[in-house]
Image 1 (cartoon, one colour):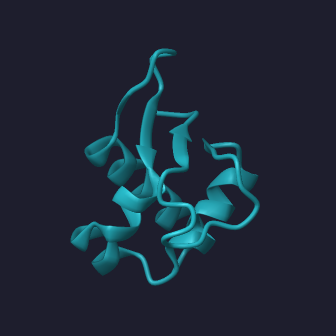
Image 2 (image 1 turned 180 degrees about the vertical axis):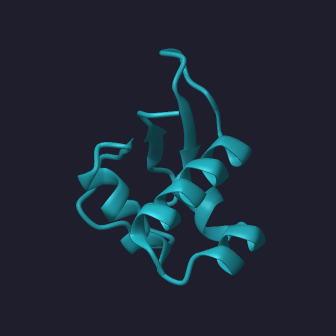
Image 3 (image 1 turned 60 degrees about the vertical axis):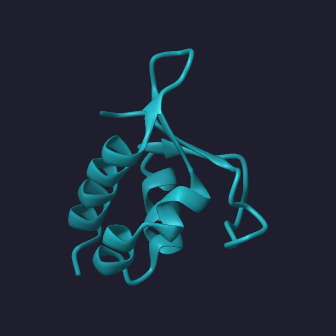
Length: 81
């Protein structure tokens, strides 16, 4: 699948599941994204899509590698709506 297309889908899912933080940016916890049934059906490799979006400076998160359980409370912040 096309990485740019997957990143666009990721942005849409973050907007659907997230909420605005104090800076007015949309934010969602990694655990919320990872455990959402709709996201599970869309993304074969959610972590890989997140890493691609981070490289493109579309999202920001404070971890090199996101692991389910360990990083469930890490905020994924949408930098580009």
